[in-house]
Structure formats: C-alpha cells, structure tokens
Amino acid sequence: MSSELVIAYYDASPDTTRQERWQALLTPLLGTFRMVGLLDAAAEQAQIALVWSPPTGRLAQLSALKLIISLGQGVDHLMREPDLPKSAHIVRLVDPNMSHALSQWVILNILDHYREGRLYRAYRAEKAFIQRPQIETADLPVAVYGMGAIGQVIASQLAGLGFDVHGWSRTKRDFGSQITAYHGSDGFRQLTQTCRCHVCILPLTPETEGLFSAEIFNSMPTGALFINGGRGKQVVEADLLAAIRSGQLGGAALDVFAVEPLPDSHPFWDEPNITIWPHVAAQTNPETAARQVASAITSVLAGKRPENLVDLVRGY
Image (cartoon, rainbow, N blue to C red; front, side, top):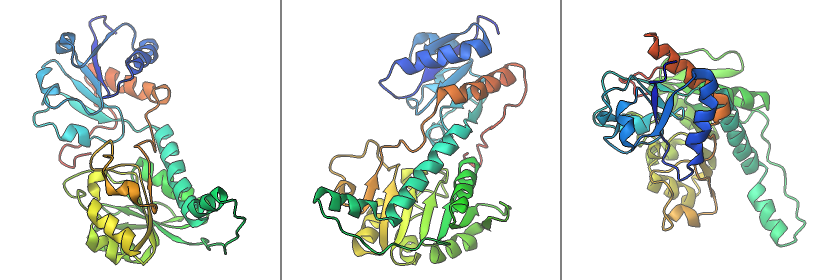
C-alpha cells in the first residue's frame, strides 16, 4: 500500500484507544498508512472512512472518499446521512464473532425467561428456598425476524436446543430442514399469531420502523416473550410497555432503544418484566474483523467490488 493512504476513523466512543487498536491491527494487513480522526483537518484527504454513527454531514465533506466501512452490521446510522459522497462504496461488517455473540445473548434471555431466572434471583435475595414447576420448552415455537448472517446463526443455535424455530425474511428463502421459512406480510402475521417467543434481528429501514406496535403485540399469544436485538426504532415503545403491563406480553429483553443511552426518566427502567441491556449484545471485535476491513479496502483501491456492499435502495 502507498504511504499516501489515509483512513478517517470515528466510533462515537470516549475510548481513544480504539483508533490505536485498529491502526495496529490493520498495519500488518495494509502496510503503511495514516489513520486520523474523522473530525481532524487531515481527514479531508482520506480515501477510506471507518466509522460508527459519525456526526451528520461530516462524511459529505470528504471529497476523496472511495469507501465507507460501518463498524458494525447495521448501517442505519449511515442511511440517516442526507448527502453521502456518491463516489464512495458503503460496506458493513459481517463478522462471525458478532453472530456468535448475539446468538448467545438471545439464548441467554430466552432460557433466563423460561427458567424463571428473575424470580429465582428474587427468592435468593430473600433466602427463600422455593421450587416452582418447570415450564416446558421442548418444541416451543420461536420466531426469528431477520434471517441474514446473524439471524441464521441464532435460528440454527435455537433449533439445536430443541426449540421449534421459524425464520422470517423479506423475500422467499430456504433455511434448511431445521428452520421453517416464512416471508412477506402474510408470513409475518402468521408468525406473530402462532409463536410464543419473538426475536427481532431486523435492519432498520422505512419498512421496519415502528413495525412492532400495539396491533402486532396484541396479535401474539398471551404471555409471549419479545426480544429485540435489531434497532430500537422498530418498536413503538409505549405500545410495548402497555402490552407488558397488561399481561399481553409475559416479558421483553431489549438491547436497543429509540434513544440511547436510555434516559433516566424512561418508564422501562421501572418495569421488572423488561430486561434492559445497554446495546452490548454483539460488540465489534477488531481482532476478528480486521481482515474483513482490510479486504474491503484493498478491493476498492484495486478497482474491484468489495464484499458486503450495502444496497442503498434496500437500506442494508
């Protein structure tokens, strides 16, 4: 690689060591390059931007950009940009390590709910040795909404644990014998009405914003569990809270919210049947993602099409 290669970096975190970590991991793969902060004046020369949730309008100021890499599988933080450089490809990370981590998070929340972990922890605090009848989960129907790289791993892992897994995608697809495939609006409605556990791993698009509303929650079997590892704006939060408080939903586990960090005054904090996670279900691991980032950079600089290219029409 030429020493003239400049990579602009931004991840909206106060941890300044992250940029240094990426520089150290990418140098053996790319050779000599300069990594600068996205907000630095030197970023005006950058051909590559490695970013997560950059300040609105900043990328549009970088006229030399050839490639924008999202520091995660989601790209909605980039789709909000009003004027992305038209000359730049946009790619997202598809890191198996993230799929593995998110599948563990989903499994953790499902098992904790159906093995009544919250209740037993309350008994523990009271030093009460109380046994409850075990909830039967063999063949329990679980819906996974969003059968991309992460969703397929989650569905496969759940099937391996003996759950009856149903996967929903926007268009018709085949996920093998262990997972029953559904697609389109009819398939979506069928799953909401029949499954007892619902896992959202969808990308945020105009079609999925506000998708999980009172109408959908009320169509689910009474006492259903809702898990959201997709994006917070896919859920009408007031409707979810109402469904929890009425008993229509038996519980919810949320890793994402419409506003993050979740405000102190938000009513979710006071609802014991909502488990709150601070957007940590699957965090980008530079060690496992560096080769994918380097491959995208070398492909674009060589005039080739990079893998995991974002479709701007679909929004992911």
